[in-house]
Image 1 (tube, helix red, strand yellow):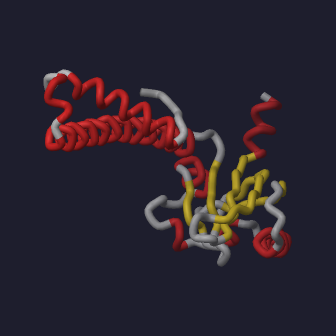
Image 2 (cartoon, one colour):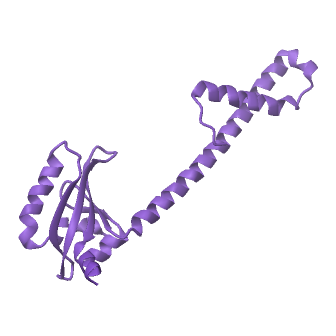
Image 3 (tube, one colour):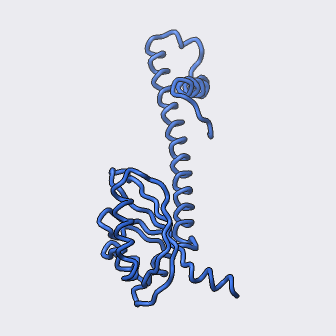
Length: 189
C-alpha cells in the first residue's frame, strides 16, 4: 500500500476497508443488536490496527533498505567523508577517509583532524575551522591544503567543508576530502 493520505481521509479509508473485511463475518439481521454493534465496532477497529501495522512494517522495511543504500554510498565513495566536532575531533570517517589518512576506523574520535594537516597549513586550518564553527553561515567552504597521513607521507587535498547542526543541536563540520595529487597524476598519464 503506497498510499499517502491526510489523517481524516486515511482514517475513513481504513475504516471502509476494515468494514468490508468484517462484513462477511456476521449476518445482516443481527446488526441491529447493541451488543452486536459493539462487537462489530471492536472487530472493525482490530482490523484497522492490523492494516496499519502491516503498512508500518512495509514502511520500516523500505526505510531499512534506504539506510543500507545510503551506507553503501557513504562507505564506498571515491572520496573521503569526515565529520569533525566543535573540539576538532574526528567523529566519523568513511572507509576511503581512513585509507587516505592511514588510520584505523575503530576509534577515529581519538584523533584531531588538525593532526593530519601539514604544519605549514595548520594556522590557516585553525582560523578557517574556528570561523566555520562560530558563524551562523552554513554555506559550503572550499580549501586546498597539504595533509599528512599517519605514516608521515603528505598529499595535497581539496576540502569541501559544510557546517551542520545535528539532531542534538550540536554543530558539526562535514568535510569531503579529495586527494588532488592523484587527480593531477591521472590527468598527466
